[in-house]
Image (tube, rainbow, N blue to C red):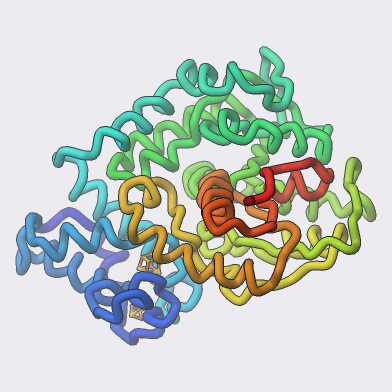
Length: 356
Ligand code: SF4
Ligand code: SF4
């Protein structure tokens, strides 16, 4: 079956295997098919018709992959694995029955009016009716509903950002779950609704938007604050005795190469502790924790062990999916660590309740 993948993307892999140690699913199974190289070979077999599209391993591995893109920065051949995975899932999942929970999530964020409705009951950052020329703060879809304090904190840190109410979803959820074309269209619609620079508090949204609209238009909050170069950003609250760790956002780190900025900001407000697996996916991975809860929990466990060992006061996150995943994990383990978004840590807001 040819025409599923862009040939230049698929041809680039030289099968060197440098990516294997970086892959969390290969780390869990030790099985070649669960590695980036193994999955690219499955894609090639699908493309050339060696394997049919209903081959059980092809189906399983397109779903088992976290989509974390940890295989990209370590690849000497510059394989764009994230783009390959989007094409793979677009082909594999489009015509198949998908779980109702995934369909419901995609439906909920498919129209700006529905996204606005998600945030209505919550007090996210004050939004104005009209969009000026930018820069703009993006409210996100589920973040505005689940963690409204994040955009309020971001507004305090960056009061120069306007917050127009006319903004929908960036389309990352669609693009990563088998609806690539719709995901790209939603990103373009958001780009038209928010002309000029767009600043987001979600690493996954930043990477998807930058991929569609161009890097020059999109900034994740820590990048924006670092670019501004203040000696002291407005609204920052210090607590030097707090032990603060960080969970990277996979797509922010592996897709946009942003990981220094949040660490430098956190080191200004407390005692920064680098966790051994800070750069490794926490298992949230967009909809992964909903679609594959058992595998997601296996990926999360090592993070919870490290958080417990480091006896952190605060764990900072850069993405709403990681926020939910780690907040729930910390609560289940009854750890004393608070999970908070970077923006909340910087302004010293309460964030999530402690575990026990
Ligand atoms: S590191 Fe890159 S080129 Fe090497 S096997 Fe992995 S994806 Fe292929
Ligand atoms: S995206 Fe993550 S889980 Fe998937 S192959 Fe790459 S490193 Fe492994």
